[in-house]
Length: 237
Ligand code: UDP
Image (tube, rainbow, N blue to C red; front, side, top):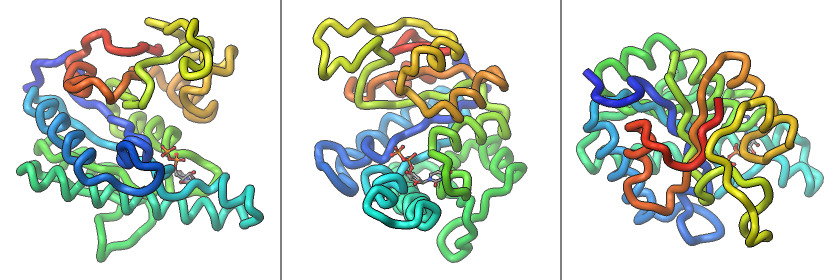
């Protein structure tokens, strides 16, 4: 039984979260620290599914900007998310957690295919389920994947771990006077064009009333705080 605000959440980790201080690829030590936080969070009794991005390895839009066919480049991006998911799975299992990776593109030798009811069953048994390969469709993002999977598995919230500690009215790295929002409506995120999630993902969350918490990964313990429903970062509803 969960002692937390939520009973089932999706944590969205961008690819950049797995590269730590590197510009590219996977930083195993950094992943280990995230895995430890997830272990602490799951100990509270909440069911946790994770959607992992791939931007630390490959983004379809970058490939397409260099002349690649966009759909092909997007498939490469989706494969990048599988590598990240396996790295995270490895770290979580080293810490003794039980996990399953489910891919939206079948690769049965590597991971289970995504099967909604099976994912829910794993969660009920206390396993961490990692959704890999995005939605399986080009022209989408892993943010949209998080929104879609959250709706499918009836998650109570999407917890978006970022390198900034919330949503600001302008880029805090460029503007020292940028103001952080405590709370926002989805429609404001869309109208103001706040780049927290792509608009497809925002619309899906809005249409399905899935709250979103955008918070910074840089502070230790924030994943657990977010899972416990503490006011970290910005709350979007
Ligand atoms: N991608 C896709 N369809 C999806 C999810 C992801 O085509 O449903 C591709 C897309 O090319 C994207 C890449 O996978 O750029 C990596 O995902 P994303 O950019 O969302 O990762 P993040 O920014 O979270 O690291």
